[in-house]
Amino acid sequence: MKVYNTLSRQKEEFVPLEEGTVKMYVCGPTVYNLIHIGNARPMIVFDTVRRYLEYRGYRVEYVSNFTDVDDKIIAKAVEEGSTAEEVSQRYIAECKKDMEGMHVRPATEHPLATQEIQGMVEMIQTLIDKGYAYPSSDGTVYFRVKSFPSYGKLSHKNLDDLQSGFRALQVSGAGQKEDPLDFVLWKPKKEGEPSWPSPWCDGRPGWHIECSVMAKKYLGEQIDIHAGGEDLIFPHHENEIAQSECCNGRPFARYWLHNAFLNIDNRKMSKSLGNFFTVREVAEEYDLQVLRFFMLSAHYRSPLNFSRDLMTAAKNGLERIQTAAGHLRQMKEQGQPGEMSGAETAALEQAEKFICKFQDAMDDDFNTADAIAAVFELVKFSNTQAKEGCTGSFAEKLYGILCTLSDILGLSLEAEEEILDQEIEDLIAQRQAARKARDFQKADQIRDTLLEKGILLEDTREGVKWKRV
Ligand code: AMP
Ligand code: ZN
Image (cartoon, rainbow, N blue to C red; front, side, top):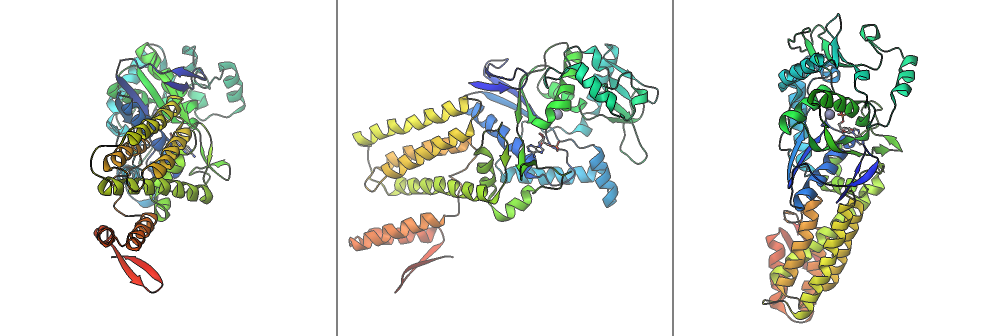
């Protein structure tokens, strides 16, 4: 299995630190509003990576934080006259609802920054003790970037270039810093903001330290995969590496995975640009599985442009898979009893080729676009093979393969309660054919099956009409 590592800028063979286990950390959202579909991209992508790793037999320890203390959360609390805690708790709950709708499974752990302050204070103290950080006169603690010679290794920036870039900028707090490159680990409180005591001043942590602390606490000093959107490469992940490696004295994450942006009109979707749709808005118009399918239709390292056309294509594509699944479900019940025929056994072997194709695609840096193409090939194959007269066990086997592959992509076919229009039309056509062949027993059986699913048929002069009851 190969994964693209931002650190080496190459695809590398995936070998976990501990056989059979994958320790994975994904940077989560800052919770001051409903999440937008740009934030949803890493959630969906890395949930799919997790599902695939599990399918390949690994036990995955998956940690994803919520940043629940931040300037934007505080500003929102001031704006609405509540507290930062109230704001973050509300949006964490809303985010979890969106995740459920998108079939993003809860992480093994979802730590909150505000619950990990003690660990952050301890890590900052260790960095000071080891000479990698220093408090300034106002109590702000900075990381001494020059003390870590490999700073820049993830973003492939060199210190001299960064230095000249910074010289041109008027950096806030620059007077307190030894060097403009140094970044904040702890900052003094401002009036009316949440704060915690520390050896340096009452205050709160800088943003980067929380992930170093949480990854260490919940996964250990060394982890296998660290992931997030590509905007996090610099400075966030670069700073996490500096903090963790200086504190622990060993390499931090082996593989760094970054998703490309979800764009709109070819610009990054973001709250600050105001060009965003929330997941909740999309849910008003589409089943969130459609959003998930849309996200996975592109490779995670390719930029993806959000558009109505692409969402319609995703909706149609997903329906094609669901219709095939519905058909197989029906054949499973209504197919011939008994063992599969020789021809069916041979066909099943052919169908297994699509599993290999799917796996090959996912083994190549989680190429979900090609994996979906393999699912479509399976759908096409199953539509031609699971015909009238096939055995129930053949349909059941095909259905099992289709469900397994769909489940890796986080698409549920089994739990579909609502019968799709296409499925209804197919059953009506079969009923008509049965009547024509004077097989009234079968025709009635189909009518009853539909009624069980809440579909009432009416035979009218203009043909068969149906309605949901
Ligand atoms: P934030 O709340 O801004 O820290 O973002 C949470 C996660 O969403 C991070 O992994 C970001 O990189 C990611 N993210 C934010 N906007 C986008 C976007 N337009 N496309 C893809 N990922 C994004
Ligand atoms: Zn992080």
